[in-house]
Length: 283
Ligand SMILES: Cc1cc2nc3c(=O)[nH]c(=O)nc-3n(C[C@H](O)[C@H](O)[C@H](O)COP(=O)(O)O)c2cc1C
Image (cartoon, rainbow, N blue to C red; front, side, top):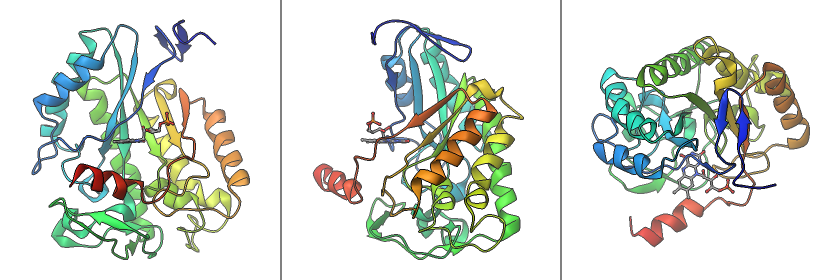
């Protein structure tokens, strides 16, 4: 396959087959989660005519944040701050998607309202360390299992974040269902021990992902919605007893909905990679 030849991705004519993946930068405002003018410079520099960029993971709510200075897309100020970033990419003819993110149990109480515990499908503590809002690394806390009615709130947060991404001018969105964050915590049975309709069978564990995809596709045409998954990856201390059956079901459900693209991460990264990176960078 010729990397430099055009490719039709849903409604988008890509100039080539090279896509910039979502890369967390931790450069947003500390207090308000709004991307700074540096983000416009950064993405503008990387934009090319007909080139697809998927912007860094961006939390859909305060509850969904798990790293210091990552951006959000749930307040009017955040939406306003994303607009010039989008314009910098559009000015150069780039195609720009936003990755929507909820970290679930990978958060820390320092990010949560009133210092509450991070949330998860089940109260199971991940191995390894969390970031605090003060850039410290501390052992993960045991999260709080979400109540059934709170799950609908999270689906609504995704919908609202999708609406906000549209208002900010993005061309589409990617649902982050990879790397051990909330949606993958629901999908896999090491992290999901629920006994209600979000746990147990594969159908039940995949329910949150499909509800999120269906909710955001009320806001965006489905051919502008991508999904990222990382089957077989143990990042975030996730695992499943039958990943082939689980992800076959997931991929079939996403294909039936006609999503824009499926973004698959090869399971090369290992738990502990973040710690190694942090050590290297001296954080
Ligand atoms: C510093 C850094 C930040 C990353 N941030 C994100 C992110 O925000 N969202 C995400 O889905 N993946 C993130 N990743 C994973 C990359 O998008 C990518 O999948 C990874 O580097 C492996 O490349 P590959 O998927 O092409 O094999 C990050 C990786 C690195 C090194």
